[in-house]
Length: 480
Ligand code: GAP
Image 1 (cartoon, rainbow, N blue to C red):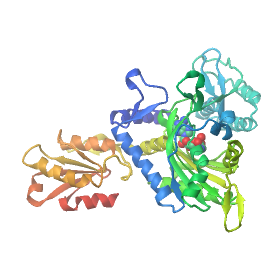
Image 2: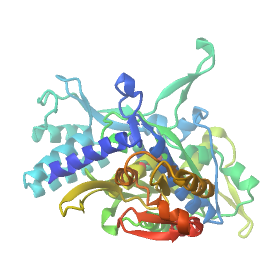
Image 3: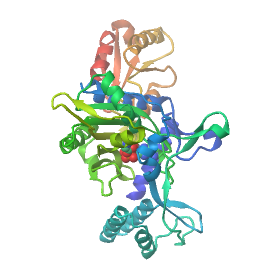
């Protein structure tokens, strides 16, 4: 079962490259670990996911506005936010292979192996103990746990482990042209701080009253030690975050509200409920008083795609302390000044992309004319996320059919993305569009010249019907 899932995952990765969704970064130089580039179809799908999130957060909420803050921020930001001191993972090195592991990943992998051997209770007990030691930051107990289970390095196959140490995940760089004058900067490890430092600028310039939110989409960078699982854990990735500012004391209510609202957003894309689950955090981040992950069932199991965090007034208070600038909000109704509390929703765009891609990837048998079957690969993407909405095919390259097809293309391209192709048989052209998830294809044939109709073929059902050319644009728009 596991190896079937794993081979399915490998097929998805190969498919993503072959059809222009995702390539390893700097591919000609053999790639850069945990860094990826999005190709022509990939960047459209990614942009559509972004737009769908952005609209649902800003356009659909009267009290949420967007910003686009710079990646570089004043270095004190990261001191205030706690990232300089706390943004680290416990790591352990194998002395023989020199390979470094995140302690939780090392133990979780071993626990999965126990599960596969049918030792479910032992696997559960191990994870419970790990969670307890992580919560208490008891590194010697964690190391003892690794040794007592004889957990080995995958490379050297030995248990020759170092002590466990914290490893900071922020990338450093320098600003300034002369080395002596250069100041250390960090590449932001989350977009959230760009929102916190702009809290009063936005509140005043947009004349906002609590509760209100600020949304942002942008790049974040983390020097992940164990970078694996394709675009699930990257060193350069994108986040879609929203900080919702509220009066102190209302955080429980708003935490529940955003927990539910965000899960509903995922479900609104048509993914079955069974593919999602909540996972409350055992070890809370340094800024949170409650936190829950929304997990998606990836080909390698249920894993976090989004986090909902009740961040208290931690960030604004710390920025007030470090910047010596007031971060308080004046409530005209109660005549009080206070620092708002914050509920954060934070989703990884690339992880969402992977969730959508793995959910959409389908291999299915299709009947051939001679009664046998063949397999087709189809991406059953939600129509609003598909890179192209309509593919337009003249049946032949002559008899005036390309001219009609081009007229349809020009008419539709102003409303949605269209794909035009004249080459190969119609069957082959359908297969290519199936592989990139185009929901509808139209074929212009000789009958089109007589009665101004075309054949529309639907991706998921493969059913075909004739529609009037004049109705085509309206029909596709109705699917959107
Ligand atoms: N501002 C809060 C924050 O950054 P997080 O749980 O560390 O919280 C939020 O990250 C989301 O960002 C995660 O749910 C995940 O989807 C995404 N994410 C985090 N690290 C990532 C990585 N290395 N690669 C891809 N996505 C990542």
